[in-house]
Image (tube, rainbow, N blue to C red):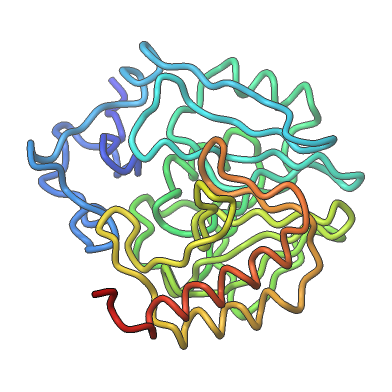
Length: 269
C-alpha cells in the first residue's frame, strides 16, 4: 500500500509519505503563518480530492486562474499563462486531481512551474512529476522544501527568465526568496502575496499577513524601486478579487508611498 504524503490543513503544504501524520508543521509554526487554536490538523490527497475540486476562470486572454472549491487551507489561486513558447503555472494548489491534469494537458501541458514563496509550495513536487516539467523555487527559501524531489529546481540571483518574455523577479520581504512574475508582452504582474492587492485596489507589503506584521519602510522602499523598473498595466495577487486591472504600476508606486507614510506618521489622537 502506498503511504500518503500528509497535507497540512492550515497551509496546504505536503510532507513526506509516512504511516502517521507529522508531529508538527514548521511552515505554520513560523510567525508568518499560524497554528490554529484548535491545534494542528492533517488530511491526505485522497481525502482532499473526495470533497473538493479545482475550478478554472479566464482572467484575461491567455491567463487562467485556478482555485480549489470549497476553500482549502490558505485558499490561494494559481495562474496558468498560455504563451507562444509554452505554458507556465504560477504558484500551486494542494489539490491535483485527474480532471485538472486532463484539462491542463489539453491546453498544451506545462513547460514550467514557478512558486512565489513557501506558503504556496502545496504539492508542487507532485505537479512537477505529473507534467514532467521543472518547478522553480528560489534557493533562498530552500529550507522550507518539505518534500525534496528531482523536479524541484532552486534558482539563485535576482531574476530568472522562465520563457521568452516571462521573467521572475526576487523581491524578498515576505520571505527572502519571495518573488513576482512579469509577463512583459501582456503588461501583467503576478504577485502571489509578495505584495497583496487590498480591497481598495491598492497594494500591501507584509512580513506576516495573518498576524498583521508589516514590512519596515526601508524594505518596502527597496521593493518599490525594483518594481519601478518594470512596466505593467495589470496586477493579480493570490486571492480571488485581488487584482488591479488598470494603471497597476502607478497604483503600486502610490501604495509604496502610502505604506511608508503610515509607518512614519504619528498616531492619531
